[in-house]
Length: 239
Image (cartoon, rainbow, N blue to C red):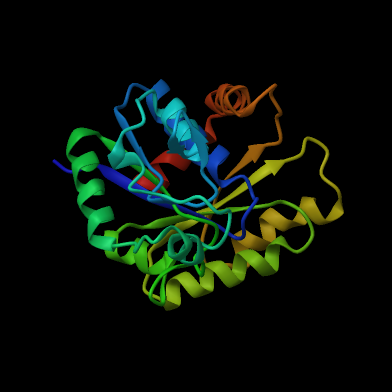
């Protein structure tokens, strides 16, 4: 049986999408599930021992407790630019079918697969095709990661509206890095997103910092596992 899967996108770059994706993977793993992860396209890769490395994919695999394999990272690009531009500079053409075949192999091996997109839905990947088109090609529902502060309502509503317009199934929104003591804008943002976006609020991921990203993912996971609503969030995301 093929895996239950979700495509994680963000309202923008830098909203903590990888932290959130790795946390979801770790939550599922800690609950006893087999989890596959995938970062189909990574621009801005580092070079290590002569090979391009996706640090995002490494964090996802840490969360899932699996090794980084070629199926986790079909396209590794050097420049930290829009993937279509970075791929052009590297002489690479991103092929959605290559990504789909890698995804299918992961989906046959695991109960769950977390696929993390690049930036937001409108990020160009290849030949006029966008991240949203990739999610459609994979046939996956999406979850949107949003920031908590002023401006997030507009960005989140634009993302969920665009997603539905393009025919994507939006499972809901995760507000990431939500502070213990929110300011006025942060206090009302989750409710407004829940009521206006046409998509349910899946949950609030706390603003907990570790010494590095792996510790951050572990600490956020530890916190969420103590919250009764976390089980509901996972059911809503994957059912």
